[in-house]
Image 1 (cartoon, one colour):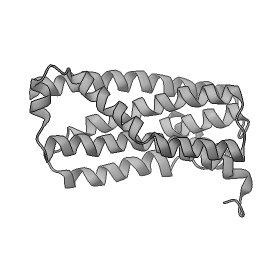
Image 2 (cartoon, rainbow, N blue to C red; image 1 turned 180 degrees about the vertical axis):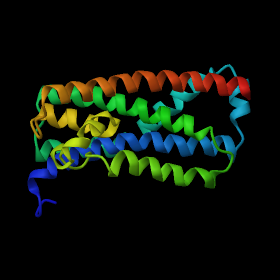
Image 3 (cartoon, rainbow, N blue to C red; image 1 turned 90 degrees about the vertical axis):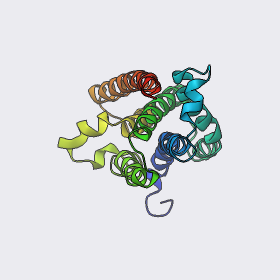
Image 4 (cartoon, rainbow, N blue to C red; image 1 turned 90 degrees about the horizontal axis):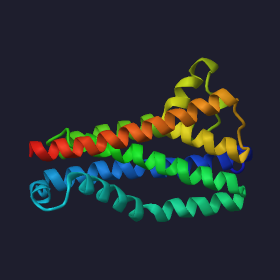
Length: 207
């Protein structure tokens, strides 16, 4: 990309940061399912003083810490290629937290829907491709047909990348598009995190 399209390299690096953050939730999907299905430890956790939401959020937070080094390395590389200003750093922090909340909630909820690890793998692959490969995460929004750009602004990964790129001056977007991306990301983060906590409590009662 440095040779073929050097102007897109910073956009691709920002996309890699967002996508790596989203993948944390997919790691949670596999880890939570592995603990529940293969080790059958869910009943032990639910019988302990640990609350269901603490179990869910603790595992999600652990995944964030465990997989933060690659994200930090990408952030450093981005800073070298395209130095970020203070506003971009603030946007990056808030946006990545939102993506983490969304992805972790999706990953945890999906992990509870299956009884066989092999049944989970295709859905994990589908989610990573649907949220990371197809939408404009690694490439500019302008390359998406105009009639479909609204859909990209609603997806958490592409909306996050577009918000960071816009604040950094990598790909300016219209004010209404920026507002739609920011609003969608905020609503999805709050709603899905709340649903993840509710679902953790419900699954604990069912157990």
